[in-house]
Image (cartoon, rainbow, N blue to C red; front, side, top):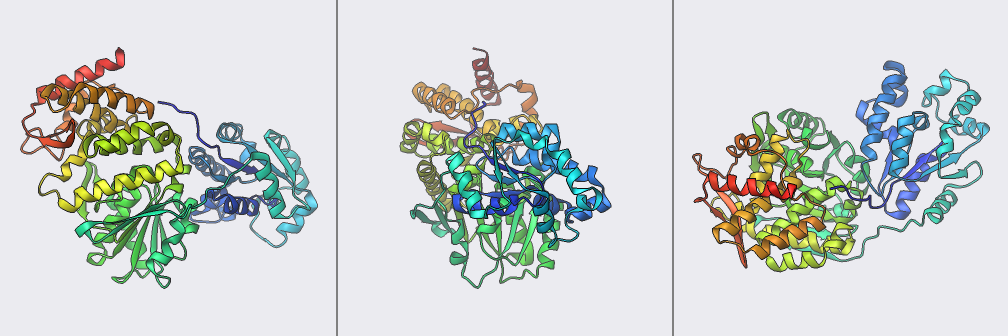
Length: 531
């Protein structure tokens, strides 16, 4: 399922005080791209300054954290990244930077370094340990790997930025002024979808409102400077590690320390894990404080941030502790999706297809016509896709907010087998969207056998998933997923309840499908991989 990278990151390297951070911030501002400073992320993650890490833990520990942060950043796209001065000394670091995007080396003379660091006493620990000229000579070879070099001693920041823009023909991610706004029926919330709209959050909340922000270890740096002033900031781990009662407890302590009371607002800035955990903490802090979801992944924008499901995992299973808690506002800026890795981006594509297959066949036809543009992340197509999905989900949830009638269960099309594949792989080799894609194929193949669906729909689904780079068949034997199927929340008293698509109609939940029927369909879809 590999795909070519979209737009590469731009890395800024060079000796300390060469202007990497200043140039990076300005380059990010004029191009609309996110900016990441490796040293700043290290300090936030370690909870201390670089100088303190060197003093208390030593350079070896600093370099270990540095390498881990760099690997995480290099999974992203379209970012401006300021590297620490010593990053490129490591051979493996140089390799992954080279694979992730062009490297601009900002050159600087020793006397310029001395002048610039004179105003930063105690912040450059290596200068207190080594001779400046000797350190520069030792790093000269490491800086030879750059694809573009600029002497920065006499150049102002804006001129350096202009030269980099010209060299790499960097276009801007700008807002286009168009927004789609939806009210959540009786849910009491609003969903806004658009390009470049994250900066509107202060205006939408009210200029006198300073929310408490919850983000993860990268989204805080990617987008934190776009949402205005905040009352406080809490950082969660990346991914599913954020969804635990331990992390919720840490958020409670952060809320207490930040003085969050019933009149305050919590903003969840990140993907589904951030939204779920921050949402659950907001729902239960002082019996509920106002929540705003600012989803930054496609999966969150089209699905998890909408509808009010919040919660965390237990060792016994996913999302076993949670609540229905509607956000006041969901603000989906599709420009945020440009920085996602292909692996992360495609997880949301399955949920997009789910809405077309199970809820709106005209949307399915539109996806077939726009599959190439969607795979390439065309911003106009992304905005329309996200808005369409938001409308469809709001319609379903407004009629069955707490899953009393069964209508909302339709949105789990493909999830029964998908969740089982995830769990059987211990959430490693199978991720959510990939599992849902295969789950939809199994469900649709079974629907063809029950008469709910025709073979033409199945063929069209296979083609669309292939065009979007999604899996076509499972790779695990039935015996491995069977124990996890039994934990499906739709099953009642051990009885199979399965969502099946229908040709020309919305999908439906059936409780008359036997486990043997599901098993047979699964085995037949496995064979597609070998055919």
